[in-house]
Length: 602
Image (cartoon, rainbow, N blue to C red):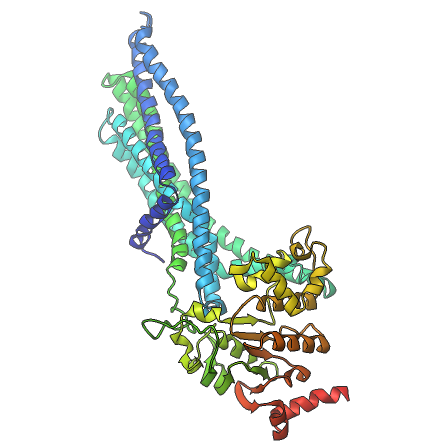
C-alpha cells in the first residue's frame, strides 16, 4: 500500500497532465471554485445584517434604504451561484473528457510497447486490469483537489463568522467531527485494499461474462449445454465480491452511527451557548441567527473538507495504479527483451546477405521451469526456403517467436548477417520481419484495412493493397464480396460479412505481401486450406518472394518437400537439418514422420 507521501507526489503529476490538456479549462475551474467558496458565507453575513436592521426597527417601520442593498446583493449572489454551478459543470465535463482521452491514450501506448513476456504473466494482467479500471479516475484527482480547496476556503470564511460568538466555538465543532477524518481515511484504505485483493475476481467475472456473450463460443456453449455451468461460475465470483463488501460495510456501520451522534451533540452545545449569550444581550439576534446557520454549515463544511480530502486520497490511490503502469520498468519481468548491447544499435538490413544463424539457443518461458528449446543450432541461408517441422508441442511456434524477437534466448544467440539480434534497433529489426501466425487476428474492419495493416504506413495505398491481394490469391475472394475491398468483415457491424476459415487465412497471408521485409515467416497460417491450395499458395510465395528468406511451419509434407532446407524439431531440440532427399536417406525422425503421413494416401 502506498504511503501518504507517495500518494501526495501524484498530485503534481495529475495537475500537470490536466494543465497540459487545457490550461484555459484548468484556470476556469480554479476561478469558479474560489467564487463558489465565498458565496454562502457572504449570503449568511448579509442575512445577519438584514435581521439586525429589522429587529432594531421593530414597531418603528423598516428603513428600506438600509435593507434593499443587502437584499439585492443576496439575490445577485443566488443567481451567481446558479451561474457558477452551471459553468463549473460544463467546464469540468469538457476537461474530464479531454483528460480521459489523454490518459487512455497513454495507457494504450504503454501497453502496446511492453514486451510479449508481460502478456504471459497473470500478475501483469491483474495490474493492467487495475490500471484500466482506475485510469478514468485520474481526471477526478485535480477536481477532488479543487473541491477540497473550495470547501477549505468556505470553511475559513464560516469560521470567521462564527468567531463573533466565541473564538473557541469552532474548536468544539472540530473536536466532534475530526474522528470522522480518520475513519473515512481508514475506510478508503481498506476499500482500496479489498479492490486490489479482488482484482483476480474481477478478471474471472469478466471472463465468464465474455464466454457467455462471445459469438465464437456461442456454438459450443449451446451444443454442450454449458450456459448454466459458466453462469453459476459467474454468480460464484460475483457473490464472493458482494459478500466481501457487505462484511466491510457492516464493520463500519456502528462507527458511523456513533460519530454522527457526537457531531449532533457538538452542534447542540454551540447552539445552546449562543442562545444564552443572546439572552444576556452579549450578541444580537442577527448574530444568533448567523451562529445557528454557521454552526450547521461549518459541520457540513468540515464533513465536506473531510469528504473531499478523502476523495483526493481515494483518487490518489486509484491514480497510483494508473501511474504505476506508466512507470513500469520494461525490464521488471522475467523474459523481457534485453536493452541494446551497444551504444548505437544498427539498422536492420533491407536485404539479408549472409543469412540467420542460431547458435546454441535455449529458451524457457517466464514464470516457468520447463525448457522449451534446448541448445538449438542451425543456419538459414539468405534467400532460402526453410521448413520447420515437428510434432505438436515440439517448440516450433516458440522458435518462430524468437526469430521475430518477441523474446530473447535464455542462452545462446540469434544472428542476422553475423550480428546478434540484440545489436540491431528493435523497431528496425521488426520492420525487416513479416510474420503470419496460425492464430492470426481477424479485424472487424474493411477488407482493404485488414490487408493494409500488414504495412500500416501504406494502409491508404489502394494500389499496393490490391497488388498484395493479387499476389496472395486473395483477389478472387474479394471479387465475390458485395463491396469489394470496402466490404466490412465480421459480425460486429450490421453491414459486416463473415468469411470462412480458409478465406480469413488468405486475408492474413495477403498482409504478409504488403511488406517489403527481407524475412517472411509463416507459422502454419494455411491450416484451414486443403493440401492443393496450400501447395499452390507456397509455390506462389516462392515465385513472388524470390529475394526473401522464407521460413514456414507446416505439417503437410507435400508442402515441406518444396523447401531448400528442413529443420526437424523434437522435444525442443533441432535433431535433423537438411534437404528433403537428405533427411529421407538418413532414415531418422523426418523419415518416420514422412512415411507415417504418406501411408495415409497409399
